[in-house]
Length: 583
Image 1 (cartoon, rainbow, N blue to C red):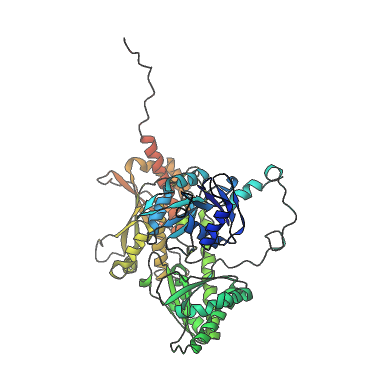
Image 2: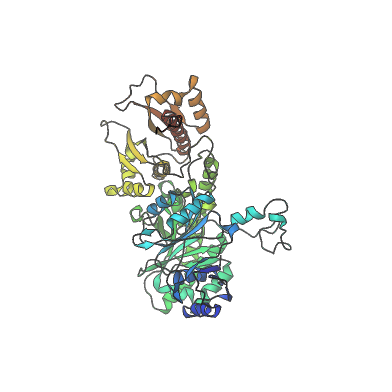
């Protein structure tokens, strides 16, 4: 993705002048500029320099009276479903961006790209080509908070794989020569790196020592540990600590961590830094509950075995944009290194268990874009890209609604233990407000019916993806706060109101539909008989089960209701005979 297309080039411009522009802006390039009529191509040495050239030149530099337009050069066969969106306002709320992208189709993945620019950059994959094309046409130049978005195609490797796949390949294409050593061919697969990278926080004053003169120290660490290390110097400008992300095998991550701790210890000694320099690990909040364990048993065990003191930042420090907790480990370098291995082992196990559960259930919930629901860490924060988690097949599924277009809002009444209300609401309502913003749903706790009630009703209003996010976090919160036993599944009752005229459709002839629904979802679904419809002529359908079972049942019931609504819509009148005009 390092080849650039330079458009809007004046007929008077020469290749030498374009190369002069690149040199003037200190933009490295590999090889000469290839000038065509009105446009040109240039190769950059790496993706980072290509991104910088786009940011510096595109729409900003003029040559012979014409402003250059610079973007990734993407062959037509690779212009598929993948877009890059640049110049995103730096403080834009991500749910706003998600909502904007969803207008043009189903977003399969949205990954933030680390750049040196103040504005944000994301790579987006849509489920279909026409969705990506429409998003490109509508969003390129779209103004958000006085920032004009810049949208372009980026190479879609999946599209190329489809083109050249199959017997004989694309138009008789035959790969040239054998696969190179180290390529993912049979029998020569390198040891895979962990899906969860190691994320650390280090004091800002030690960053220079970790990088070393002209990057020599960090290059040496990456070479010795076979890892890729990103030092996010531009993040949190002026902050006392900077995050570091290490991508490698678990062993490589641990080796890099030890090296970084040794460098910080030496630098602290050389600079007479008197404060203790603990190891700080960043971990997505989804995994921290299982790291701690019931009554803190897992954490205590790690502390005892490694002879360290471990503390974890409070939930109140979390924000929608920073879902990570800080795990602070104090002890000797040797002890902290052992603790890092055990902590990350537990976090990786939690991630793998979640992925396995998602893979098992994802095919049961067509119509929902599970990958974009934020249940796993994002690529920028936690290192897990949505593509690592298998989701339902793209596009509309038979018998289920497609939510690429603007979905209708739904209301679900979820019953939670009365004792858990405080945990769900949080101190001064912080947790429920945060959850509401994260999910994009309205969440309210209904007043208690009486003093001895054992359950309280949470009223959740929002589209399907918002329902999935909100309910999923509530189920997870109850498990995390130990309102259910360690081996006990969280099972809750949810109510959906349906028109009384549609209740028979949910039940089916002789109870056939509701029985099929229960077999499909493993949830208990009941439409109580002899209900009196409420003032809106609606009756209640009760769904009881674990999270995924409940979601499958809810989606199927909503699809039945959609079918009923479509059938009740008046059919357009057939066209009559043409009118004869009288003279």
